[in-house]
Image (tube, rainbow, N blue to C red; front, side, top):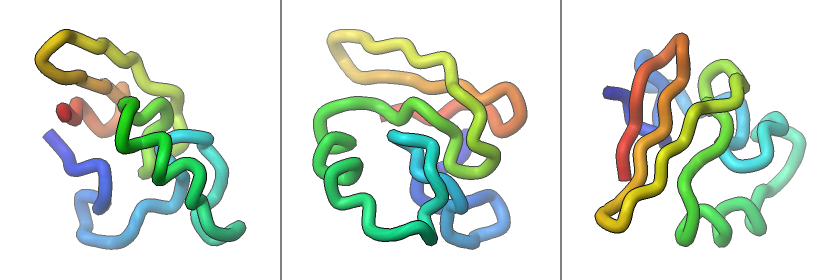
Length: 71
């Protein structure tokens, strides 16, 4: 399992996990606010769309290359 905030090598994510755009393109304040209520949709490491499952007790998101994160 990997963390949604940091990459496996400890570096900051390259892609926004909500909109899929590059994090260096500018602030993603709207995305950050939305992420408090919803799971990530894109992998922050490779920009792939993730398979997301929302349950009453939380959520899980799976990237085919980087594995599963839960919240």
